[in-house]
Image: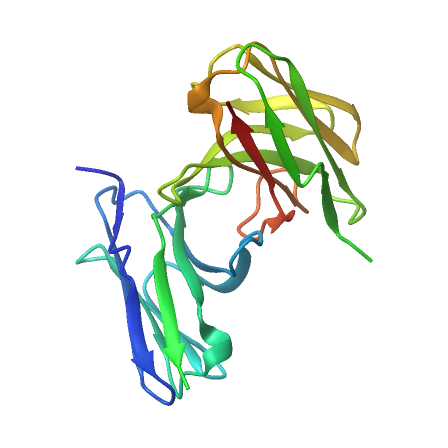
Length: 111
Length: 114
C-alpha cells in the first residue's frame, strides 16, 4: 500500500457545485496535512494547511482531517472555472520530515 | 518579482548528455529543494539543502548532483542523461531550517531526453 492514495480523476463539475477531494494515508505518524493547487504548466502552491485532526476554513475552501480514519478532505464551495487545476494533498510526519505528496486530482469546473 | 525562478523552462537533449538546471530564490529562505514530477504527475522529492548543506538525499541515481553556490541558489546537474529522466523538475524553497509545511515552488523545467 502506498503511503498516500489520491484519486487522480479527472473530476468535472458545473460552476457553482460543491467539490469534494480526498486522500487516504497509511502512516499514522503524519501530523501535518496540506493541500497544494497546481495550475497547468505551473508549480504547486499551498492552499490550505492543517495540523492534526479537525477542520479549517478559508473562504470557499474547507480542509478536514480525520486521523482515526487516516482520511483527509478538501471541500470547495461555489466552485468557479478559476478553480480548475490539479489538487495535491501533501503530508508530513514531524517538523523535519519530507513532504509526501499524493498523485493529485485534476479538477475541471465548467461554466 | 519572481520568488523562485528556474532556467531553462524547457530542455530537450540527447541521451548521454550532461545538463544543468539552475534555481534561484529571492525570499531569503534557508532551505531549498528539488522535486521530480513524472508523466503521471507524481511529485517526489529528490534533494534538499539547508544553508549549503545537504540534509535530505532521497534514493536518486548518483548521476544527479545538487550544487549550491550560496543560500539563494540550488542548481541540479545531471550526468549521462537517460530516457527515464524525462520529467518536469521543480525547485522549491521554505523559510525554516527545520523544514516547513509551506514550500514555494518555481515554475518547473520540462526535461525531454531523446
